[in-house]
Image (tube, rainbow, N blue to C red):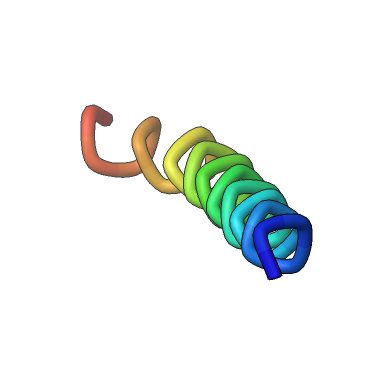
Length: 36
């Protein structure tokens, strides 16, 4: 049970990391347009 929860937690953490990376990429593309 404990192991399962830890696995799930790692998956959530990884997913958040991917979302954050995607957000950063999006910001890198959009930010110059906002600043210009």
